[in-house]
Image (cartoon, rainbow, N blue to C red; front, side, top):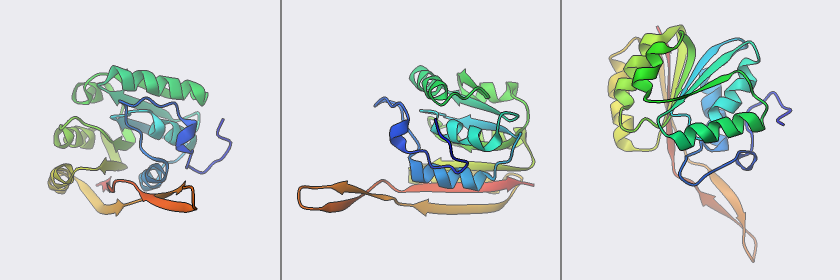
Length: 196
């Protein structure tokens, strides 16, 4: 379905349900680039939501790579499976459950994306750091100031270097009866780092 090697699948290509979040296209592109993915890698998508990160990452790591997508919400798990099927992706294992429990069962990762965490972000980051290979990348997307504060405090105490924090605000065009206007989306802060 997606015939390009670059990330940036339009949001409308994904199946959506109102209760399950999606990482928007432009933010997704930045997160994928911050992970510095390569063919054959092992990737986690923690709090996978609609599965958009899993789909995009799958294209980057190729058929020899493996993704583990975890979400505690059954609706998110089903939606991720639907989107994986829609894009004919077969190198992703979708896991229903609490990431704090499920991460222990997974192989070591080359890259980890952390999205929705239900308020357990700090504990999840600590768990991810233990499962990340040396030189591996972690990419965390946040929208709440409190989550950002917690992430920064946690990540500074762990074995991470090259800590990078960016905030992006995307505006998208919308046609009106008299022309085109730009509508701003909520800002998203992206924290990325490399395990020492």
